[in-house]
Length: 127
Image (cartoon, rainbow, N blue to C red; front, side, top):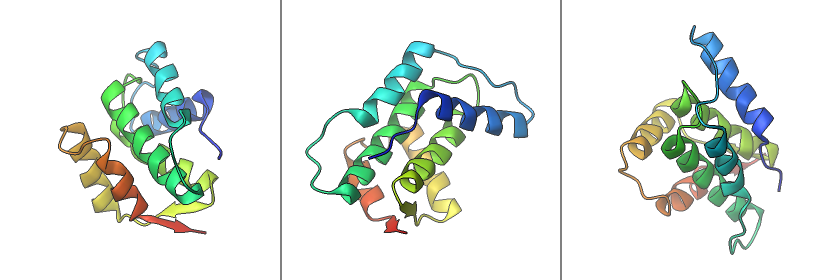
């Protein structure tokens, strides 16, 4: 399984912030390290699809709750999970509205981190 590096996550956030006319930057470097480590922790995944579903959910929740960046944390979470799926030969099948809604619900603590596996597992398509 291929994971996002801190540099890749910073690049995603920087690109989003600059496009939005905002200043990119790291809010908490320790939290950024935790965000990178969370998806890499071992779980009892059975196959690559389950790993991707679990890891995308964990990554989204970690970015949104940890807010490692000065700006654009929610947008970074959305792009990061799509990138993580892509790096592992999967694509997300959410519509834009569905993904925005999911990010908003996670941000408002309306979705448990453990429920994200089921949600992402239902929205993964192998390339």
